[in-house]
Image (cartoon, rainbow, N blue to C red; front, side):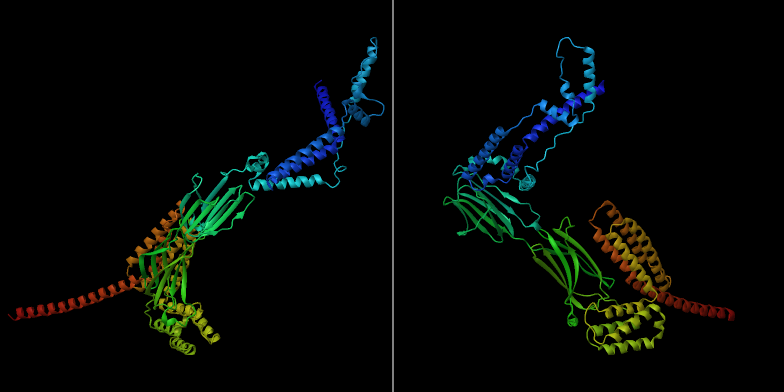
Length: 637
């Protein structure tokens, strides 16, 4: 029963849908014209076609729309075709049967009052059975017959493009509703609108400022402080053309956006006086005073220190009103090395790549090992150069002597002095080679050390392959000579210190990468390498307990823990300072001046004990002689 009712409802809906589509197909040509007309209207509204040429054009467009719409409606009414439901039922029956019509038979009634009810009932059952065999086929609607060029698709494309353009330019509401606004064409004197704002340079990080213009009819004076190199923008909306913009009585050209909107953009590099004249009267006067960008200010928080005779350290602070672009350190070429290619060595102290949250104040903790530099030990000029985003720069200069390591080994001193003479151009390359060869021929035991042997052979190969010396800091010869001097000076300490340096570099890399797991691992390795180095020191200094090195080791452990905690909390402030201290402490382990002092104290203490021992021995001899004399006197008495 339920299934039968569902079939009745389904059949009812399909019949009505077929009836609807049948009539659409009959009038498809006129409906297509209405469809194309609607798309044309939508496209022209979205593009604001009515706004192209003013009032008469606007009226003409609306009039054409109406005329064309009326024409289409009249044409549609004249040519409209309508098929009633009976014809649609007949069309469905013809598509399914040749000799029966069950849909029409549903409405059959007995012709006479006295009829055979049994036969009539059989007729109804037969009709219902035939209804089950009906297959509904919807009328096919084809537009290609009336639109073989597919213009309808072209209109759809233009409509979507118009929607995109209007949306992107925020014109949808204005263009679709503005066609009814006729008041904008009415000529009124008060319809003169000015908007102005200041767009500061991007590096200032200042927002655009809309200038508030009082609502007066004339004589408006506005004073504004403007950051240098800002853009001053003015937008004027006016129906009439009775206005001009002047700067110092010179007319300025305005960009015309459309018929009623004009735009002016000026770069403010000096004080400006801009006047907007309306109806031959000074309407608005903008008095723009340039706010100059101050150059960065450099302050040295801690003076330049020489650490352990080998490294340079200082703390600087740079302040700028809008932001610091870069800070570099130049170490000028000393006079004795004026023949070198480089005029200075440059280190980047700070470069803003967008990651710095506050670049108006930058503190830099500089620490660098410079004892291996070929200019070491010479007087030079340290120069800090700070630049802001307008390329203004400030320079801080200081004369100081580059650190140089004081070697104690006689051979180390000889080779180091040869290197210095070579770099200063005081000795020829072939003479240098001869002198170096003599040193090693006289001290063959040095070559038994594999590291020294390899380094010496590399230097000799270099000298054999290069007959002319290039005076540049990148020359490998100078670096290899310093390493050779260090190997001879340090002896067993050299490899231990190099291993310590490698672990130290891994620690600094893990700190920069903010990898707390690697930091913990590297700290353990650092402690092991320190223990190895301190063990060698103790043996060298006759097992003297270097309490200063032990304290340094504890400080390094504490500093790395503090850095690790800062990284875990996400804090960045203070990490650079602690890393610099960590470098200084590590350097103190590798180049312990305190060991020298301890050795001297130990030697003094040893000499004092020896002298005291001699005095005690002398005193014992005197006492023994006195006792013997006393005994002899007692014996004779």
